[in-house]
Image (cartoon, rainbow, N blue to C red; front, top):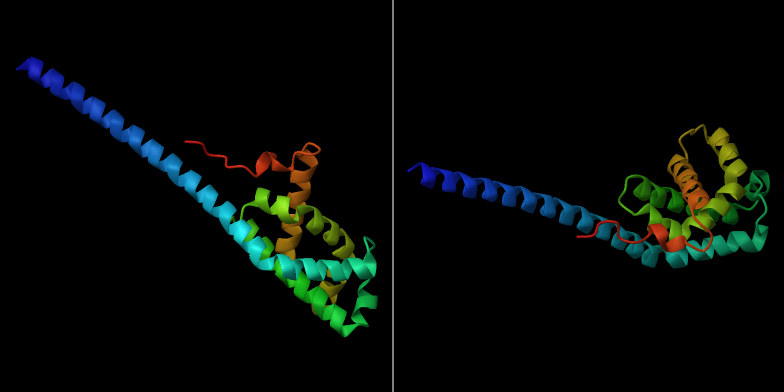
Length: 172
């Protein structure tokens, strides 16, 4: 009888170990799927927004190149001012998605990072003046937070290695 109980206990322990191992593998697969889904969502966002973002970015570049964009000068051209607002609002909600981890920051950096950092530098005083004029201190804060994070990622990245962080991190 004792022999039968010992064998039963051994098989029970093995069963528990297998259940824990399966739980671990299931959790790991769930994280991997979540990462893949975030990356896919980021690519889908890019497909949806690329033409719109590119056109607005191109208009800014044609007018100002890489120079600072002066608020008072932009204010005089209502159509261009509206385009800048639309551009910043679009970048703000995209940034909010990245900051809330709906979109993957490494893929986002690969697709938009350099341009967002450049334009943030050009629009820094514009944004500050706009906040002052409107009294909205929180305006474009998600965008600024993301730009700070992108700068940090870019400062750590080795030259010509933009792909290093955009790959799937969880391997089964």
